Amino acid sequence: MHEFRFDPVQMPAAAQALRGEVRAFIAAEVAAGAFAPSSNSWSSFDPDFSRKCGERGYIGMRWPKQYGGHERSALERYVVTEEMLAGGAPVGAHWIADRQSGNQILRYGSERAKQSILPKIAAGECFFSIGMSEPD
Picture 1: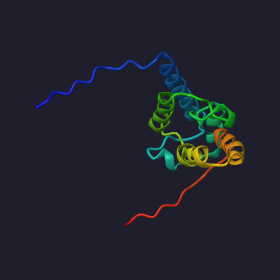
Picture 2: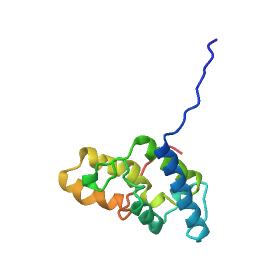
Picture 3: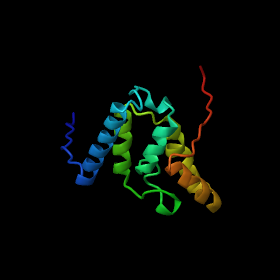
Picture 4: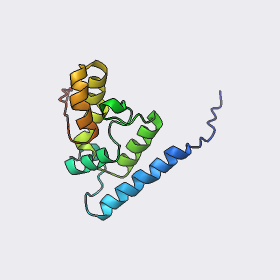
């Protein structure tokens, strides 16, 4: 039998600062009555909250700046996603556009689509939904 060992990892200072920033933002929104935290926050649709996230650069974080993105690291994007879900924030309006549709447009879309749609997603102004069919 092999023993697994995982040494503690120290988050970079920028990621720690971002975590604190997002926590403070969520706490302020809850205190202001903007939303009540939910355990399935990706299903909570709040366009005003998504717009505020866009203003803060929390959407399209990894995308190129030329398309409205912020060219942040994967770790920074993870930190924001983790804090939004842990805080029960209503991310459902921009969830699919940020996680799936926008990335598909970035990879496969025409230049016109990238220039016209991606900045609106990153601003929290353009939303997508997807339909899926699964057994049962």
